[in-house]
Length: 348
Image (cartoon, rainbow, N blue to C red; front, side):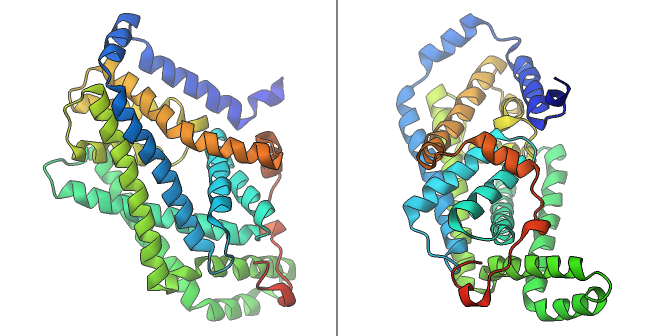
């Protein structure tokens, strides 16, 4: 029993239940019934379509990131990406990203350090896209609340720093390698070999930053994916009868993304609702309507990805528990494998 209390999943679930309880504690059944009766469910059709479109666009983005290394057919990319997102949703903290890394590596015979580099690239382009949407907000009458404005500056600084760091790694990798060899090979040969293996695959993963064609193509898919999510929120506004402009949907998306940068609960349950409700209350939406809207949006976000992701797990005869167990004992740097020179094009 004591081991249960040590698991991230257990405490994440406890926090989710507490936060959800806090959100719904003042809502009566009568309020819920009134709102449901006036909801226009026809707007759910384009909202669901946009949810699926967002998943397709993010899968296309990952295909673009890896296609210089391995050309994977899109149906395979889509199912694999969906399964990876299920892991990212279900497992709290950053365990989901580790599970996703292991899944991609296992199923596509790509090294873990290479997959890690593609995840770093995804985070970079998501950050750039988010900053562009924040810039759009700054050009209209809406402004981010002060508590979120400071976070946006942090994201801007972190994004620029990450981009510069990756750029320097790419353009000075030989010099960095020679310094590491001179300082570490004699003193710590094991650590030197491990880092050399990791850097070999990692630099291959971020190599697309050299190409303006791949860079802007990846950025385009990122922007379109986030725009699709903005439209999901906007169509849900219409469905619930909220008289709010499109820019309000952008603001809800930006604030929600800023607040959920690090997942604390499984599927961001509770934290998602709390943040969306806070944003809608600022627009004058009554709490009961805001809570039910947040629940509907969360379900819309989760259902499509779970539908496709769980199909992959079923067809591949894999279980989430199996990936989670493997992820808990995984050491990224210690288990990176370098391909043999003869098979360099086949396994990165």
